[in-house]
Image (cartoon, rainbow, N blue to C red):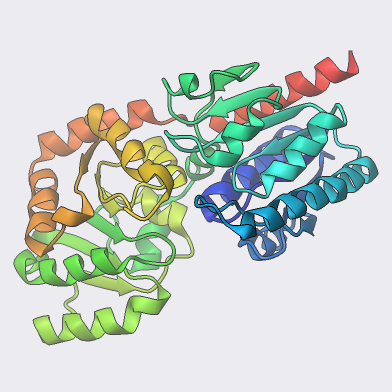
Length: 371
């Protein structure tokens, strides 16, 4: 099968598309791919690293306030549609999938106008602007959270698949996770991370929390600060603690996140959709601190989905400090029964076969075109 993938801006849009490609590779030898992304998006760096053929178009997102920039965006959209049509005619895909971000707009729209079957995947509980627009043209809309199908009332075919990123972590090796952290196998690990770039508010709360932890009480705390915050966080911790104790592991970034997640007992994190897909696939309890700086406050909506099912505790950033973070962590980590219940709830929400479900739908769409 020949597939065009499109999605960009953040890893949350890119990695689900990559997961679909990897699933199809595993199921169908000789599959061919083309990834169409933005010239300036993160995908222009990440996708080539995944050894997927990559082409770009020049596109920007709409501003939510009236602006002359939006006129330029419309012009870029139209040019993007024209460029996408040329790429699609040349590659001749059986189906096109968009996983969010404004770059999907011209690509999926162009495919629909050329009569190529299309699927869009929405990672968040509250749909993004691009996917709401594309839902009128796509043959199938796939959603990550069960019960959010109604967010696309104009969709021709709306299905619940979960997030394909969940499938990626299911084969991760926890022993490698322990080894990479330098932590004995079987230890209790609390992973605290503010997203790939880090989050100043979470880092500050981690610093304030550290003196309350004592000697770790047999628990290993892994603080992931983000590259740009690492040195200032390490300096602050040394001033507070007189050094970095052996129960506290300070890292700027984790390159083998699936393996580290596989050995994690409790995670403190933002509430990006792809990350939530990963932790529910593994059944990890969580303390979620939604970013308040995202469109439509969609991270809080994501987090509340897990909270309602008993899989997470939600701590809003306005209420975040060292004491509140410590209390939230201790209520879970110090009570085995609570942690077990949350783990089971988390696992129930996980959609471990998500990538396979998306690939199955892509096959159905491609077959309909040929019949």
